[in-house]
Image (cartoon, rainbow, N blue to C red; front, top):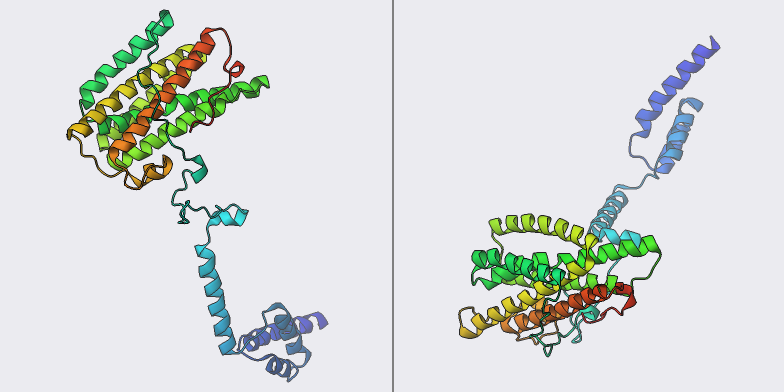
Length: 331
């Protein structure tokens, strides 16, 4: 009997407390209300509600609080998510004090290409592997010439998607080898990855000049898929052959860019202003033209030619790449 009466009192108190505590009252009014008729029946639930809820505020104060919350929320949305982890890009400026516009490379990664490099160097095939590499590259050039003809902008854009693969594959495999054998690489991992990044920057520059068509994008997918896997296997089987092939590919790239320059000089290709990304990456003059861009890209290809022929010669001499100093720091 007592238990039933007590349950009835508690239930009625909860109902009355909920109804009464839902009204917007000040703290003083709430205390007076809970201390009024009903005594303990109303006092307990209302006291519990007051302890569990946020302090009740006047309407004006509540509105200002809501505005502050919305303001903080909008400010939070404008913050980059990575800043939560304490990762944010430091403020970087050019030499003239203007803000650095690129995220893909920083001012300390820019350089001036060596235009005095010898463009006529050629590694004469001496043995079976040399001849195999040379003739394979010459064979690959035939369909390229047929497809692109003298559309050197499209040719450069497409071939740079392939040219950036060997350095990445070689650097990756040397990295894994270094981990397996607990050995230093002699700087060659960095040298080859620098080469891959440099070739990718060639591509980013050419994309600003030539917009790829849909079928050219499909061609990139097909060629890159085949070439990456083929070069991966080749480098595992014979690094000296892989580097020799890249050296001959770079010789062909020099030839292609030389023909590109001839068409610019003859007026067949308009000598348009250089893309902004190329001006900052190669530290070119503000009024640089397409011809200036092709000159520095061709010099880069000549450097890659020398690096890969040098790497192949190291292997042909029966040594490992780590036994010779890597050409780090050109780019």
